[in-house]
Amino acid sequence: MRFEVTLESAKTYKNPLQDVQVTVDVTPPSGRTYSVDAFWDGERSFRARIAPDEPGPWRYRTRASDVTNAGLHEKSGGFTCGPAKGTNPLYTHGHLRVSDDRSHLIHADGTPFFWLADTVWAGPMLSSEKDWQTFLRDRRAKRFNVAQVMGTQNIAAAANASGRQAFFLDGDKVGIEPAFWRWLDRRFDALNQEGMVVSPSFSWAARWAPAGRSLDPGVFQNAS
Image 1 (tube, rainbow, N blue to C red):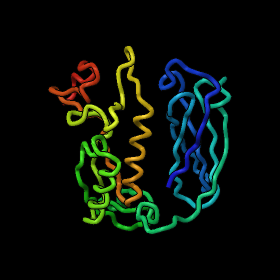
Image 2 (spheres, rainbow, N blue to C red):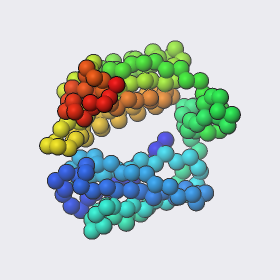
Image 3 (spheres, rainbow, N blue to C red):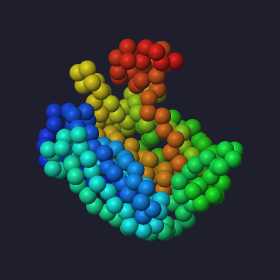
Image 4 (cartoon, rainbow, N blue to C red):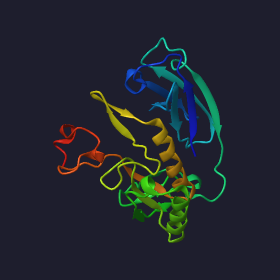
């Protein structure tokens, strides 16, 4: 499961995606502090996601590149992580990692994980919510545990089923559409709820097809 830190900026930025950066320092019960980046989620909203892997009390504190922004800088809080409920292997067995002998994948508790993936590149982009649920139930029943997908517009899908694109050119910079990413979150959450790992690709580029046909080909002139 995950815990979300939600923040409300005290300022309005012309380009919040690039005008301010927010980092969240996370301290689990063991005390080994690490950092995660927050992301802009539209308007003045910023979020950071934490995937707790230790039971007990967790703490966090934020740092913003704009230290005068009281809504983003030096905000702190905490939460308590308990044991997973249910039978979903992603939650009951923990995160994936490479085994100590580097021969296979295992969960955090040592349970082996055999990567059996279905490649459904344009599935999240083109399906309706009902279609996506039908697909997931079918693949899970056939014991697939990974879905390899495209997470942005690509040569097979110029936009999602709602006509939205993940990114676009904003002058000489890349902009994003927060509503698209919230929509994609729901697709990925549905995968996880079926016990399947998401294996996404977020940029599809080739000499003959720039990523999503949306950005200046010069950006990808060295892509193969």
